[in-house]
Length: 308
Image (tube, rainbow, N blue to C red; front, top):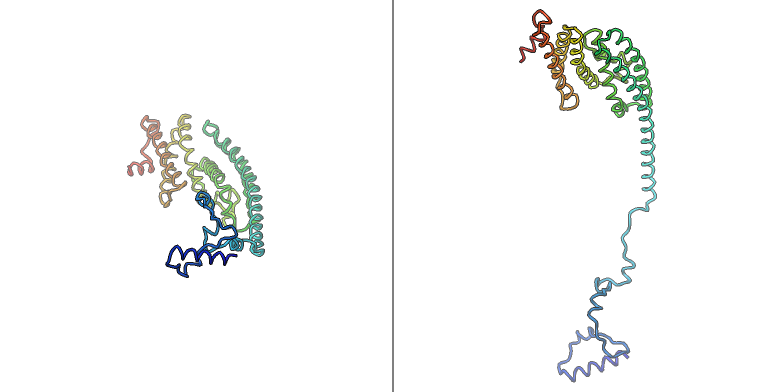
């Protein structure tokens, strides 16, 4: 039926147009089905409906069904290795959290004992007898020694992880060193050295020791208490106290200047020491100008005046 209709179509075309169609164009003519009446195309319908064959002329609808992108995953061996790795991570994090809880419990005990020592030492500013105040504060040093021993036992369970957990008790240790250094100065008038501080706390520098930066920061904290102590002692009639404190702070400040400190927390605390020294110097000058003390300037004052 289609071939007969095509022959009729070619014959009619030759009658209308003497020049025949090229044989190369004939295969582009549409083949009509049984309905010979031409259909008027609707441009809106063709504009709105886009078939896969018109958008992709080289792909048919059947090719779309066979075209796919392989997705990642599905490798059982890879999934098992990931699961095994993250399972080990979970165990490590849980063990670390449990260890930190134990450390934090001991650190809270250290903080509580330090507060009690500080509360006892505050009585010095009220002109209480120094031996009595110090004797009462020393009772808590035994407890501190036990607490640091418990910390050392906890860290024995994870060798090589000291610096990982050191930040959990750093600030508390600095406060402890500050109180110990102040007590030592009240007794002897000298500085508590690093080895003496470790001995008082029962620390071992090879396994669980006192960090140098913690010791230095604690000494800087201790210097912050001296100006108030000087003012209260002068008020109580001890006019020689400013000279002693000034000499001590002058030597301590000069020793700190030997260190090449970075621009960090320790450097900021060291910078505050010079303001403590200046306040003590002002009290000493006021006492001297009023004639409350006699004699020449001590070596520390002469050194400070020479620098100025």
